[in-house]
Image 1: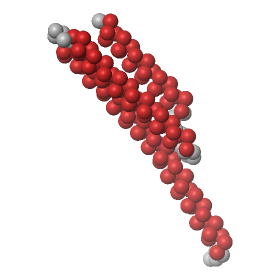
Image 2 (image 1 turned 30 degrees about the vertical axis):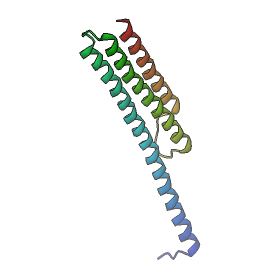
Image 3 (image 1 turned 180 degrees about the vertical axis):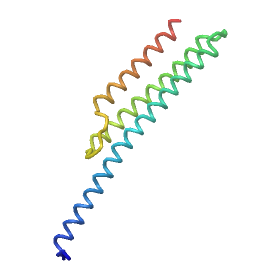
Image 4 (image 1 turned 60 degrees about the vertical axis):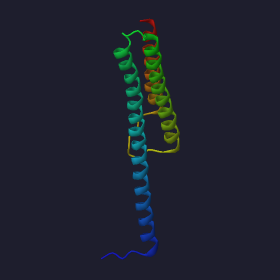
Length: 129
């Protein structure tokens, strides 16, 4: 039977504590990605509400008002998407992944930019029709 001295027991506990901390940090990195994705969905839902509003009320006499309200919801969606991206970048900058394979910040920026480009395109088409 092997007897452990106080130093080796303390080192083992330290290693286990560091491993648990690494796992917790990986969970936080992945939770940040899930939160980012959730806020992106919320932003897209706001944009969809705007387009739906225009589809329902755009045929009536108050078409410019319907377009204005639709544009407002699209802008709300864009603000949500920008906020999600900024917050996700802040968290990602503070965290280190260990075993997790997170989405690189450059890909988050690309996704965000494409969503915003789509929002601008929707708004442009909305007002040109």
